[in-house]
Length: 174
Image (cartoon, rainbow, N blue to C red; front, side):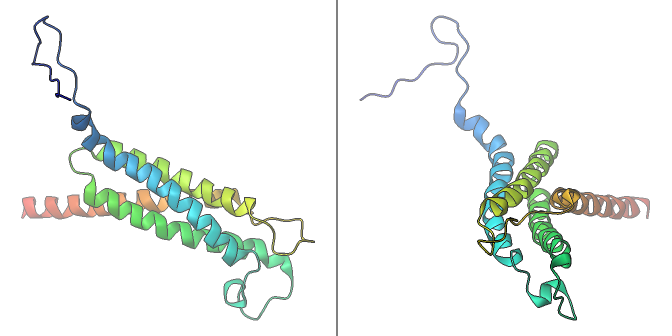
């Protein structure tokens, strides 16, 4: 089948159609950060569920705790560590790949971090409890811990950007 192309302006004077490939590179990274962190959040939810449904002695602390009162703290702590690691990686991606459009990339990274953290909690809560007699699913106790991933991402970007700006300022002054 022959390929039809439209000349710029066309015979009727209408504006040329915008090429979808031209808009795609500008949206690829923000969309990748948003959807990528959400997908990692779903996978992280299964990993966190496996880790936190019956916290091991090394996770709860020494001496070995025999009461289940420390389980929520251990679950929140392990959630914070896992999501902070993902936030750190996402922050480095934002720094390395932001290019000429840093604001949309940062906003997409923050939205993806929040979506990923919420999906981590949702997936872990949807999986069955450790013991069939146990009515409690794996969930966070302090919901503020959901903000760790976006906070780490924004702190990494802010600290690296500030330090690079200070280095440039010192070099220009000296």
